Length: 253
Image 1: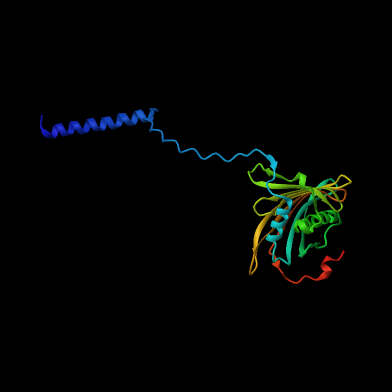
Image 2: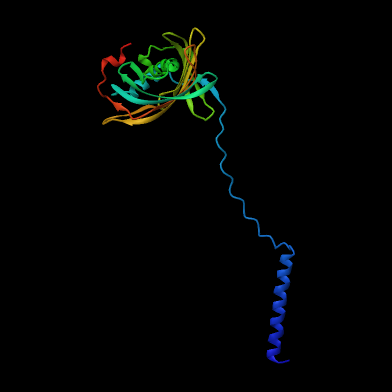
């Protein structure tokens, strides 16, 4: 057999093999599966905390002292507010946006002024004003602490708070949750003699002046069940002006 004839026969067999393989694929033959990839390392399980309560390792006076130290040098501030809520009109809940300003002057003057809005939100403005007044250091807020009820609580997100119970002028029962690191109020719950309740959750941001840094309110979430207002509201705090001059008329009734 000549070399040319041998090459021709080899080429023919290759073509036939390729054609046969193609036919098998077209008929649905399953190719050899690739080796499975090695499984990725399991992600770390998120921390899970069970809420718990224990006797606090600090005294109420320590908490008050730390709050006062954190606000040293803060004589006044004013900050714009954006307030969002819903009011009931006929049979529907209608979103309402309000704007305003919150003022503070040491040691314990706090006022909230809101631009004219619907009369239905007057109770909400009163609630926000009451909750804003809680942000002054507890030393000057006339909050009477029951030292026997001071606790350390572990929250579901693993954060810890000191829980203080006591009374405040015009309120039959008050519970504060105070952050164990920053000593700001994380949550406040007020119960009134008529059965009304007012609850708030706070978040904070760092605001600096030329000398100091302060933890100032960033948001406040309000839940109210009172005769004058029932509902929820979200309050966002804008850019603070620290240690400026505030007219005395701002705090007049």
